[in-house]
Image (cartoon, rainbow, N blue to C red; front, top):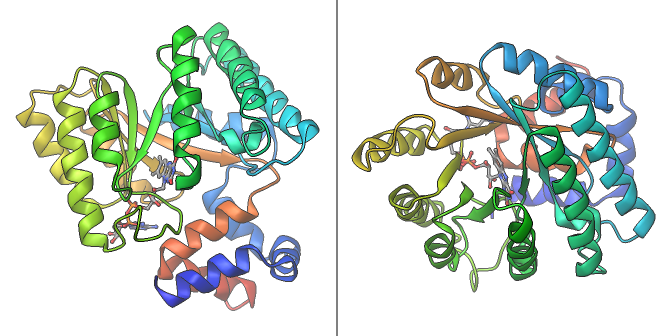
Length: 306
Ligand SMILES: Cc1cc2nc3c(=O)[nH]c(=O)nc-3n(C[C@H](O)[C@H](O)[C@H](O)COP(=O)(O)OP(=O)(O)OC[C@H]3O[C@@H](n4cnc5c(N)ncnc54)[C@H](O)[C@@H]3O)c2cc1C
């Protein structure tokens, strides 16, 4: 792994660094670039602005690896609140929610995570929208897919996420190609035994998986900022006779915003993944680890030179 990326991911777990970054006033501007804000109202306001620009949204209430029932319950309540607010604001057609099972109890009780995710799915259905289950590190893949299968018995539109860096993913794409599937490269530090670690291999697998999803009867969601992959998806969509609206592109809030608008203007469905909530630190560090340019920008603002 790139040494800068390892350093930042290590800093993500360091309490002193966390305190420094969370309290430095200059961090705010950098945080605002990637995170909608801390409250439900912030999330709805950003959703409304993106929807006015013709962009679809998936909202992520930030918080991972909950080891406590009360925190898991608080996460569920945050999702119920934001779903209600989206409905009231007339935005449920433009926005769905993304949920990490580790934030609703998966690490200590898979049954609780299923029950909590079910509460969110039921609320989403009532509000006229749906849910996608984010995918986390490879030790959780089987559990997440098992919970997904249970949820889909009642809510068939619940979205799955598959990570092209995992060696198993082509098989998972074949299994899930008839459904709503987000394909991403994968964001966690994974061992060579389970994942392609050469970026070129990951890209090749992304294209193989994209072919399987586009050939299937489901609704593929291509989550990548990679200009080469975005362009290949465009070509392959034509090849498989997929019309815009029968698949979508997805990118993160604050990453390539001009490209997001450009794709939407060409008639493509472009969904922006919008994180919000008080637990933004780990998310921000992963975004910085992905791209040295972001890190330089961030470090400069932290020491006050930009
Ligand atoms: C909507 C969405 C949902 C996601 N959900 C999950 C999930 O559930 N689980 C999971 O493990 N991961 C998830 N990810 C993260 C994903 O796995 C990758 O870690 C992340 O998207 C970076 O990979 P990339 O495809 O953008 O390409 P990269 O390999 O990071 O970058 C490829 C190229 O894209 C361009 N690019 C990338 N970042 C930038 C930038 N900041 N500014 C300008 N150009 C840039 C550059 O040209 C770069 O060379 C999600 C990503 C998105 C977009």
